[in-house]
Image (cartoon, rainbow, N blue to C red; front, side):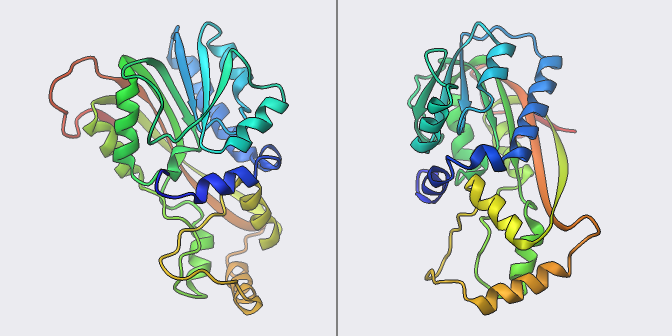
Length: 276
């Protein structure tokens, strides 16, 4: 994220609409929390919600780990400001505007790192996982949920029938994330889930993407206005994928839970991460 202002600006503009359109994101975060509540008995002193957005999970996270001092970290200041207006942020869940690839935290200072639907916008899994390793204490816990390659596949394929430009941001694969975790001595277990939503039309899909800030695009060439003819062709291409429930939108979600190894030896060269 540090090399591009795209996500920061897009999420900032979506601050007021995010909660309305982020039903899937909230559902995934709750599923991750339920999983951890069953698996972990933790008493963290310092916990961080990376990519907290409007801090919609502040209350359930504090209920789950009431003794922790939480930091709500997000790259988009308007998101945090909106969360404060909603009364979600304060002394017990303090806002911090920062980039996940350049965390303003001391080495080995965090007991629990939590992140849901945020780190996928980082440019390189190896870089951001290295930063997570730096700030997490040995034996500290890590919990992630993030969409990976294959997400929004229907939209990408439909655009490919229209032109050769990039209209969806390329996401890292689950294998790239697992490799980065293994290289940085994380002992984790993971699972993958395919979630399919359906929308009545393309306008509703666009509204969801804009409302959650997920519509930003990185192009290799000049950016121009999308003409009506291209939009009409996109609509035709997407309509060919229509199912009885509506136009499909697929999310490939990777869930990860584990710990940073306590040893300070050489990296495990891929032996630390297990995928279910």
